Length: 284
Ligand code: DGL
Image (cartoon, rainbow, N blue to C red; front, side, top):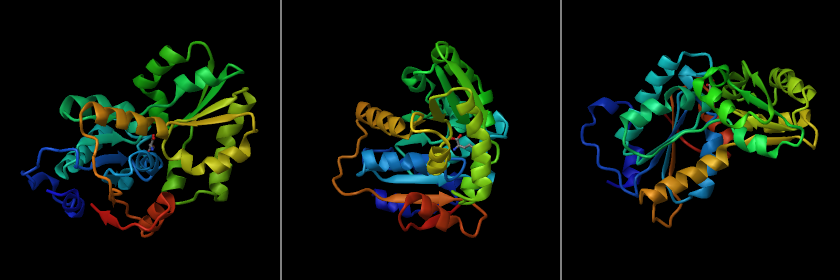
């Protein structure tokens, strides 16, 4: 089955598709997030691997994940993984720090294909900091997770790590409010304590936050470095595809399909704005 055919199939009935072909190097890569934030990761993947077909799933109806239980997020992650695998996905990218913390171990137990997750970039931030103070902006779900505690244990011992849960910020990005007064005020209240604590390196620990990066840059001095994990995730995906001989040998630019369960009437406009190009948004 061609990848073009796979991309054009309906998402609505994943459970009755019992003829799932074994993925090949020409199969698409499935990428998902609680909503539109993972598009910031998708951009890095498309830049690094332009010949790959990509299927992006935004679970916007259930965003934010940050205030949900791990059990709820696991249920959503399995549902979406089934959906992507039913469309022939050869690899999955969990383009969400919160979903990775809650569900990536379960996904790896359940499915035998490359699964790339992501976590706040504490390690590179600790290595880069000169003041010895780093800030982490993330959801409360990520910051409360056992995975984050392990990350601090491994890489946060030599520095002071100041964390900040950014309640309401994911919702702003989901509404397409990338520079509204509400978004600006929220960000000011979240970023200023990190600067006041002496942080010279701030980790964007949620994939929605790169979309408000210009606002964050307005709040920090030139001496403060922002770290986003999207490029590292794309590199790790490439490495895993090479290792498993699943890298697409195609020389044409791959197709990118967007799927969402958003109930917002302007959902397609928001996706186009974040992706930066005209796209069609399919519903599931
Ligand atoms: N993009 C998700 C992340 O990276 C946002 C989680 C949420 O929906 O709260 O954590």
